[in-house]
Every structure is written in structure tokens, then in C-alpha cells.
Length: 84
Image (cartoon, rainbow, N blue to C red; front, top):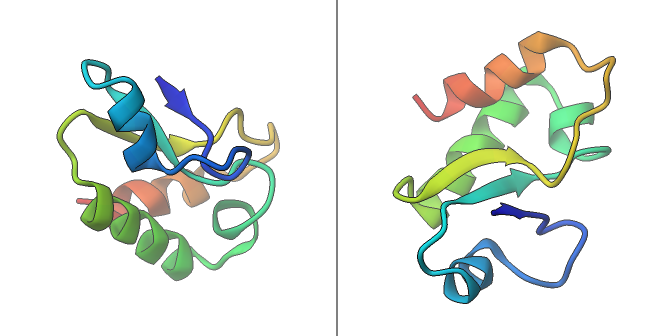
């Protein structure tokens, strides 16, 4: 279940409660915010924080929806590296 925490008033945890048997994906904003505008270090820290707070079981770190087509792959890699 792709869960847009920045486009709704529901947290990841509320999404997990509504869909207890589904994997929840999300945690980062998609069109603005740290993934689009932050430094690589800020992206890594934000990704690490989301996983630390929500957990990794039944969770896929992602953006609220689609990312801008022009986003640099290094920004996505920074999020992945932040949760390794």
C-alpha cells in the first residue's frame, strides 16, 4: 500500500493500522522536501529516521507518490545508503 503521509493527514502507523496485512510504502515527500531539495547527507538522515521510527518489517521506504523525472539517481541512492 503506497501511503502518502505528506499528502494526507494519516501517518505511516495509521496506514499500518488500516491495512494490517499489507506492506506499507512511503515515508518521504515526493515533489518537495528533503528528497528533492536536501543535501545527500540530509536525505540519508531522513531515510534513516523514517525506518528507525516505523521499523523495517512490512515496510518499503519510498516517496508519497511518483518522483520528478529529472531527479538525480544519487539522491535516491542517498536514501538507500541511509538505511543500510
